[in-house]
Length: 262
Image (cartoon, rainbow, N blue to C red; front, top):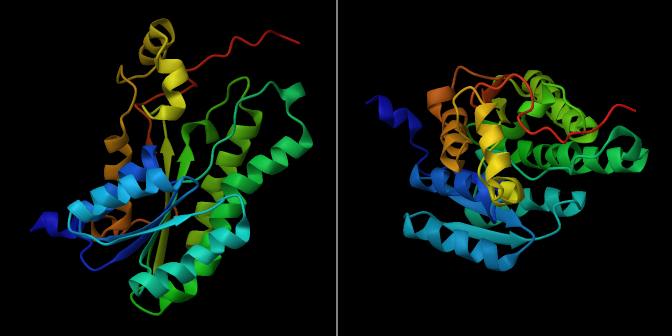
């Protein structure tokens, strides 16, 4: 059965930023396909809620409330997953994000912090997890990048730069870890999560974003989580080093901050 290639029975996934949004949606999709999941985020109450939903689907859940900007804590997730769940097969590096700012308001320190939170954290978890992944059947790594890593618009100097770095990190890591560990990324377009609420709650802004998206709508979490399953499972077993664009077909940012010429 072709659908069997999407099954993840007995596998173990680590998902960062799993308390809400794309991270939570990805964790639930992984659980629905049979994986046990380590959920990491800052807020324990959010993790508990997602964990209860994972367990209702028949999978095991381990929660780790931690500061995901702390590289030691991020790396420690690998040891916890191996100890509590017995193996590591899948990583979903979802934690990240950076507030847009005009170029002259983006300090070098701000750019460094954005790189740390979006790229260094992913690398810390990959580096810590790979030895355990290699003890069994290898596995798959999925990095959550952004369409802004490949298109240009004003105000995105930090966010776009670090997401482009994460996308290229994906390609480079795929060479180092082949053939036993596949590494791919998803370039996410505008997706209806709490991070976008401030925009989508304004009807005029929401309508403009939809008009500037080829498919005429903002994405939903399931659009991304189904892509995660494809890349993490045998369904995507002939893909590595690729950035899957799940963005509604946009070719330019669909959120214009109206920044004036200097």
